[in-house]
Length: 157
Image (tube, rainbow, N blue to C red; front, side, top):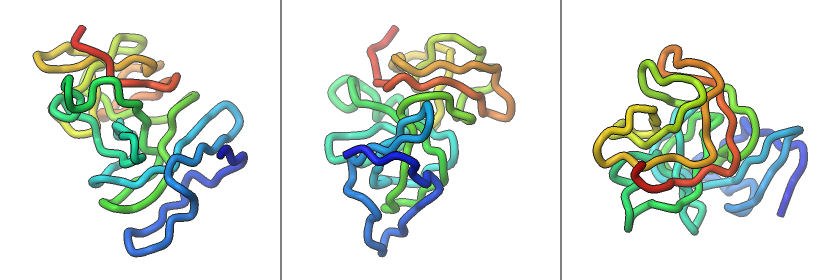
């Protein structure tokens, strides 16, 4: 189901009733989101792996490894989510904040890191490339603006 004009700041507490079915797609002009159930705590900008049950968890080199997370779709948290809360993550369009490593450059291939929710352009051992996500500005305070184009966890570059 697609819903237009969603309120992406809406978060439902773990003891509440979800506002939408997980997996619901929402749109704002030029942006697309998916409604997920948080499997862990996320801050704004965290890159989240989304499994087949629409459980979203911060991506790391462990959760992105082949046999664990390779090929999973990704989204970026646009609001803070506590463990077991429901909310929206962005999967398409311009995004204001992506959690990136220090000195991550604009328009480079990004990869997973050992830091939860953070991506970088450092190609460290065990990192998986991210396909469909790029930064449009250099890192500042471990955040950078970017563009999402239905990103997925790729393979080691």
